[in-house]
Length: 332
Image (cartoon, rainbow, N blue to C red):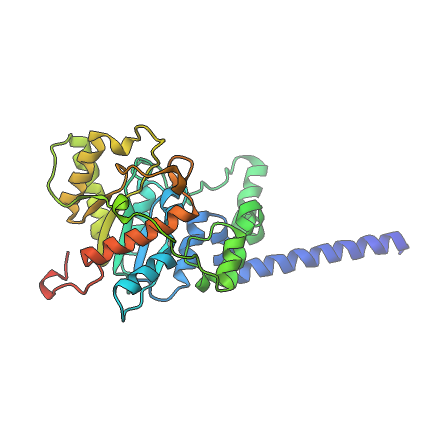
């Protein structure tokens, strides 16, 4: 065999060996690679690698950017000395009502979960299939059937999205240090800092009175039949999750003139949800908060997140939501 032919054979063998090694690696860590293909699945997989978690935060990117679980837990421990708390931020961009229902069902039997904090906002209440539900490839023609076969039998092909752009940065935390994450790490640098033990600092100073929410606690306002159905649907989600539930309407900056959450229609919906679920709704959307706490009109920045997390902890302590329930109130 000529030297060029030998080189070609060696190249093909080496390429085939790399392919086999890559396929073996993906198969050996298939749950992690599959989870890395989607931001919501990745968070859920990280949570599944944790021990007991007392508090879970559900919602859209507004809750994702707005809550630092370790700041929240540290403030709770300061207010309730002698107790230890663990929290996890399960919120993610493009969450929908169907996503919330699916996650509630997934964690309905999670042991140790004492409180679920659920975002109420116009985006969170919109219909839409969960972002992790992906249609299988079409099987029309020879090419389509081949594509279907490859997706079914070659994990490197089926989970190839895990190796693309933003998905790739999720793999380190999924494979090696998921237990160090609290769900708020959206960038590689955040993951590395969490792995190294660096924690977000509490807020330096702020006016607590300016962050006091409007509380909807059960007095229902007359509303349309469509909103009644929506309120009952949200109430069923609250009834699915173990432990207690509280709903939170995230804050807006003053520059946002009239977000939907400030309209009378949405206020009536908040009251209906509180009445039908038996859970309080803490409405921060009507507060006049300065721009210094925000990036854009509806997302808190790092400083605002520290304040909001601290104030949520204070509200939880005030409401006694992490106290052991009375024996007759065990079933909600």
